[in-house]
Image (cartoon, rainbow over all chains, first blue to last red; front, side, top):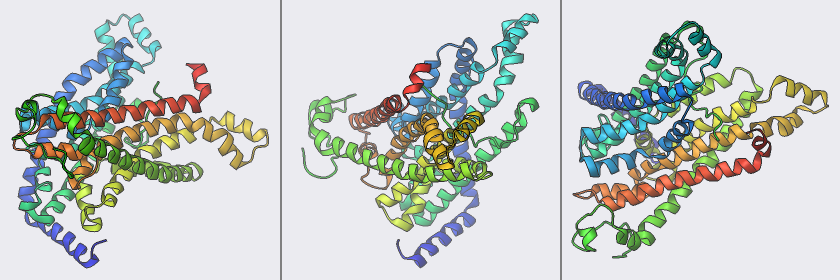
Length: 236
Length: 237
């Protein structure tokens, strides 16, 4: 450990930095949320329809499982670096790289949610004269809601927590401060690091509350959503 | 060309491919395998193994505790999920004042991330034994310790391996960020390439491909290990 008094002073300076620059840090946090939101939207536009369609057809489990493994294996740094060579520095590169990260959890959970709907329930809906579209919209999607929302939440937290790395390719919100010790000094770097941690924990908690509110009452469990996020289902 | 230390591609030298920064230069990979890629790969494997091994030991102890003491599992699970939201770049920076630009600074977060992925999976595995199975084991005269060693742990193996796959693949991936703090792992060549006036494509692609290949190779090894450890699962599927 480096000198304890000096370390304590450094952290006090970091807190002072946050207190003295709330507007600047809030602006950076908003940049980060904008980038994350755009990436999440782009990823969701691809992953959710695909996952829902495959899960509805009970086909392509390999695609869903592969997406979860490859999604985990692809490091954010590699994605951002690789897209940077194609798309150049800036918002578009970072958005695309983060969107790729977001697709994994959303695709897998959307697939699992739809695939896991009790077939008897679907048969009953069809037997009552519901069309395929009605069955999806009024039976399967509501029953798949908890897992769909879990996928979105995990993807959102992954993207928000990874966004600072986008700073190495220009524009990562609070990450811009974290990687620029030359301009902001250690107290700025640490202050921004605390803000990033608070931001991603805040996003996680907010989405967990939202998920609870949006889950149909009958499907609600008393457990806090999120505790099971990190459990892996049995895979082949 | 093969001087010691980090190799920064020199655009003035090298083959026409390297000088012109073409899409991928095999000759650069050949020339710099020994001095850049291979040492980084070995380093990366080391970072991952330490993180997962230490994380596993802590997660296993926590899961055993939660398994024995009711009411511990849920709060620890939520805490684990919250730890997972901590951005790697931020926590690396926050630990620098304490431990400097050292391996310790890098390993603490990596251990933390692998721990929070292993814990819920190990706990789920320990809880895989149904009440009927436990009843039968006790009726056969097994003591508590014997139930754990002969019934619960074997039944937990599939979930534990599942957690290990998740932890290893994620740790390989997150360990690339460690290079932000210095010459550690396969992230280092990528950061070096990104520092060039024009990002050096070959180095990014080669190191990136090695990270992904390492992650997928580890995953395959664990799948194979599970086949050996859980022979009864094959009969079912």
